[in-house]
Image (cartoon, rainbow over all chains, first blue to last red; front, side):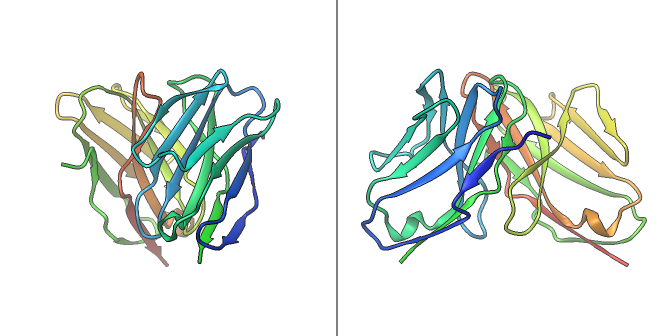
Length: 113
Length: 110
């Protein structure tokens, strides 16, 4: 069964450093998303991406964040200068069309020290 | 007011019990609804979509009441493996984002 994959599973970084989280969405899906979940809190939407551009982003997704689809398979989330409060699980998701179910990857646990 | 509200639980039930979870949503523009299940420190996994006519998948039945902006999930014959957090999720058409509730924790004991 096709699935979303994410690397790394755990990333530890120092405050102020840049991190890139990587995702490989399901191959025939057209819509890609990033969500995050701070420990003990609910899952929160960050950004959606379609046709090589951002289609929607939340207030959390400020200028420190960017997304890219550098090739036909990868989808990345970059945090330019990490803060302590960026520590969270980051989930990538994809869907075939915008109104369909979204399927989530296993997540990257980001720890900012 | 939270966009999707759920009772956080936990719901403690014995194996074989029937348990029901409820969820309310405040955004009338929400078009599609889902139940996801999340195990501790894992990703949300789709359990089922929710339709106005109600839908069933094995031991799981989901209902949507648009007039009351209310969604339910019924689990029959609970198994130990059903222990997890159940996430009520709304999709706002046009915005493509899923809006999650905080989840309801279920603990099934032998």
